[in-house]
Length: 126
Image 1 (tube, helix red, strand yellow):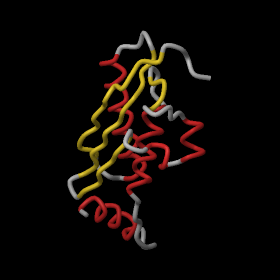
Image 2 (tube, one colour; image 1 turned 90 degrees about the vertical axis):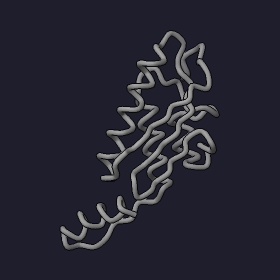
Image 3 (cartoon, one colour; image 1 turned 135 degrees about the vertical axis):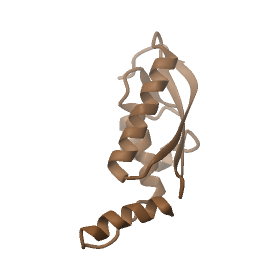
Image 4 (cartoon, helix red, strand yellow; image 1 turned 90 degrees about the horizontal axis):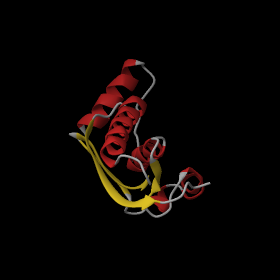
């Protein structure tokens, strides 16, 4: 609620109206931001950018979850990392990228970005 009020205040300051952001939109932002990081092969469940653009939020299932509350956004992401990539470094990059993307695109603050490594991709996906 507090986050929604902040977004509304910015819109009302412009004198145009209010803005409401659906939780599914935040989830999609998180997914696309995570896939942008080098070392991330895909989201668990074989979800890459192509599958995400075709199936949208339905493809993500339990592998990307976002909770938007008055305190901020909490995101949980299950990833498949490419073989040979540093898991701690890649995870840290994903956390930073997701935080930046959500805060920049929505104006909501990000509290947590929890990463779960579900597997290792042995070959590069086409």
